[in-house]
Length: 138
Ligand code: CMP
Image (cartoon, rainbow, N blue to C red; front, side):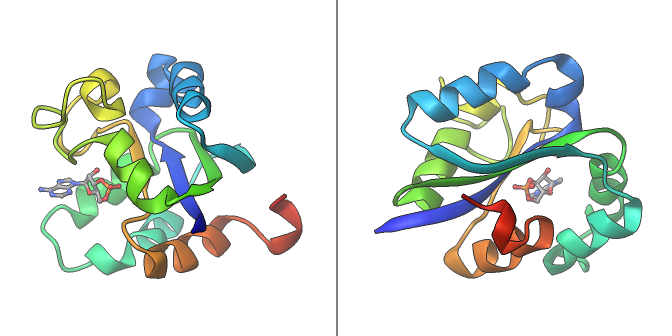
């Protein structure tokens, strides 16, 4: 099924200059970029985005990190986009991510792990409109 997923290139990867390499990987793996922008989140906006994690011990650190620099948010479209993008990202912890995945190549640690992707259709339905209105999505 043709699906959309929300992708974020996180502040660590943007700062390190990996954005182009990551976007190339997305295109080479068949993802179409239907919307894209570079923004910087406030702490409050990062907290709102990661609200499902609000009771996790890493919530404060994660939302401080995600508001620490510019990010690139994208809507990606492909058959089976949600699961396929998660496979392309690799495991949350770059040390455990399969070789050749985005996080294995460009992630630093379990928090500064280069990219985010929606983990389910329900998450995508929350995350895409968090950043993009319908007229911004091709
Ligand atoms: P992400 O896919 O954006 O979803 C939640 C984020 O929390 C995750 O990637 C990591 O950046 C961050 N995080 C930090 N510590 C942990 C942890 N112990 N387990 C899962 N996610 C973590």
